[in-house]
Image (cartoon, rainbow, N blue to C red; front, side, top):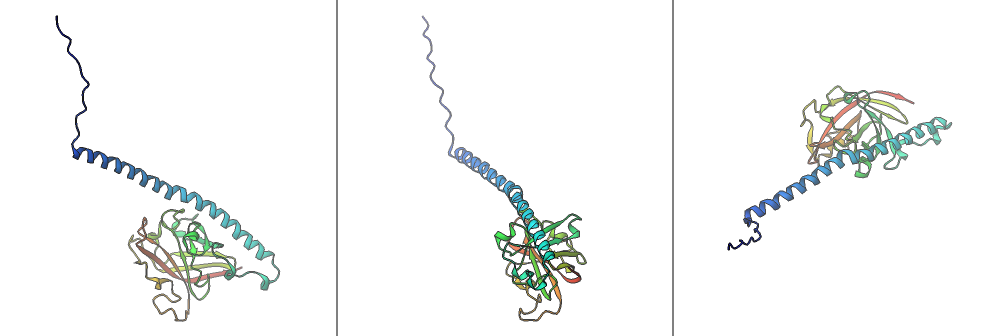
Length: 237
């Protein structure tokens, strides 16, 4: 009589330490990749939705400012730009180089909480149209990335800002000129927003200038990029 062979459980082959480590590393890389992907989606989409909503609120606020000024019969009682609080609507920025429909509401202030709503005005600098350096900062990535095409700026380009006091146009005399590394400076190079760029901060300005600043590289902030120009046209309200 033949005896039935007994079948035992097949044991899984032992994995070498190298294979175990490789498997763990693979899982970690997949997890890290998923996290990076989620971060990119949030940066491009999530923050953009928040900024779009903030822009709508700022436009409504700016329109109300204009309406209030128009209805105010006494100029002396009308608020001046200097009365704005950080985060308030300052004006409308237009840069034709970025497209006919490109325009952003500018906020008062350049802190993170301000710039997440749109480009921001350096609050200690001159106002639009005034002697000195009217300066604006903006994001190149995330929060609607208003300054994403910043390197495309060229000397001779017009930058327009509309405020409650009027419409002012500046012509750039220094710009990246299509160079992705053009006009790159160190983060500590604050001279670009001085009253007279390149001169001691105590120097009295003799012309009305504009300076735009943003991050470099686009997906980082190790440096800054800038463009600057001089006032060429103004139309008071």
